[in-house]
Length: 167
Image (cartoon, rainbow, N blue to C red; front, side, top):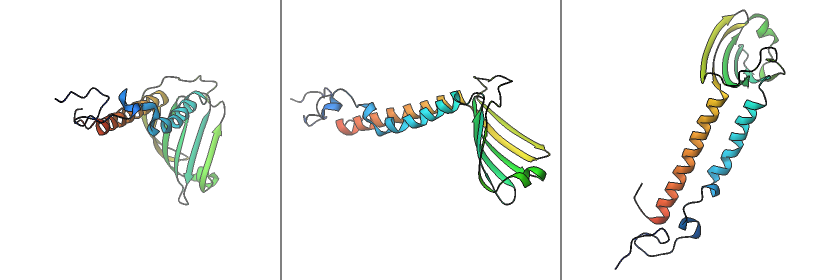
């Protein structure tokens, strides 16, 4: 007479499961869990540490095109520019780093922004366009993806170890 699997034996074989799987798959032992921490800490640091400052890393080509990633004032952004005039002459070709401390100090920081923004324009320095994501929205998206990966991995390991086809 066969008994139902009770979580301590492999389905249909009676073979004992390894200890961590008897009580469920240990999600905190997953590499997904440990490799997710640097991203979470980086997002929190980028949001909370740069509320009045702005920073940007950009790449400028010979033709005056610029691609930049940056953040500050509660958001992260990606920006593409076509530099013209004085802005093109002053820009160094290659990788550039810009840091503007206390850039928003007079205005006060918007801690909770709209989830995203798309912006574009044309001014004396050239045409530009970009996308900004509020830091809180980026953090929630990151936590959702990270939590989903942990749950998916745990479920896959549980199915593999128990031999069950149940969801």
